[in-house]
Image 1 (cartoon, chains in turn yellow, purple):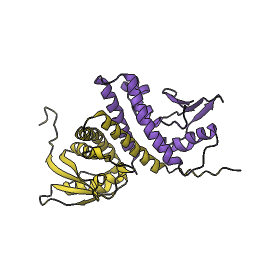
Image 2: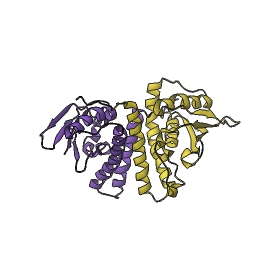
Image 3: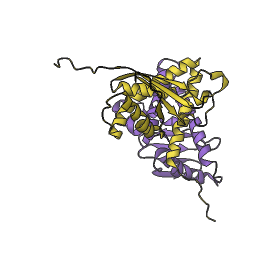
Image 4: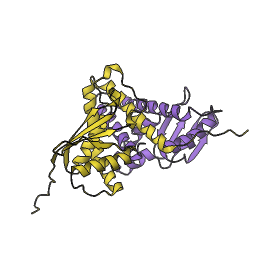
Length: 180
Length: 146
C-alpha cells in the first residue's frame, strides 16, 4: 500500500517559521542572560542595528530603488518595498507630524510574534525591538539619522502594532581627505 | 513570510552574540557550542512539530531519515541532501556539498578556522527521538545522526 505523503513542502512558510522560531529562541536566551527587560531591549536594538547596516546593501541591490527625494518617499519605500520584501507584510504609513518629520507604520500583523505570548514578568519587554535597530541601522547607511520606537504592540494588549519613526538629521557623507 | 536573507543576517547575529559572551569570559568555548545547540534544539523542535503535525507517523528510522534528507532539508536549506549513507546499525551520514549556512562564511578566509564551531548547531537541533545525536564536520560537510 503506497503511503500517502501529506507533507506539503511549503518552503516559504517553513522559512518564515524558521526565522520566527530562531528569533523567539534568541529573545528567550537574552531574557536568561540579562536581568531586566530594558537590557534585553537594548541588546535587540543593537543586534538589529548590526543587521540593518548590512541589510541595506542587500535591499538596494535587489530592489533597484533610487535615492529618495524626501522623508515621505522614504516612508513609502520602507512600507511598500522593504517590509514587503523581507517580512511579506505591507504596513500602512499614517500619523504624519505637521512638520513632516515623523510618521507611524501600522502593522496589522507581525511575523515575529507568531505563536508568541509575553509572560507576566516581562511587561517592559519590547519583543520586536530588533526591527527598530534594523531600520535605524539601514537608514544611517543612507545618510539618515532616525529615532525608531514601538508606540503600540499587540503583544502588550494593543490592537495594532505601531512603529513610530522620527527623522533627526541628515548625516553628512565623509569625503576622503584631500578632495576639493 | 520572512525572507531568506533576513534569516541569514539574524543567524549571523545570533552566532556573534553567543561568541561575544564567550570572549567576555562568561563561558568556555565548549559551553558556547552547547548554548548554540540549545538554541538550535528549540528551533528544530518547533519546526518539526509544526511541519509534521498533520502527517502520519514515521514507519521507521529510514523513513525519518528520508524525511530529513528531502522534505525538511529542502524546506530549511532550499535543497535536498546530496548523499545519504548508513551502516544499517543506527549511524547515518548526511552529506551536503553546499551547506547554505556556511557558504557565506567560507568565502572569507578569516572564518575558516572557526567555521566548525559556528552556525550549524543553531539549526542542528533536530532530535527526533530520544538518544539521537548529530555532529557536524565542515569540509566534507557531513552530519551524522545516531
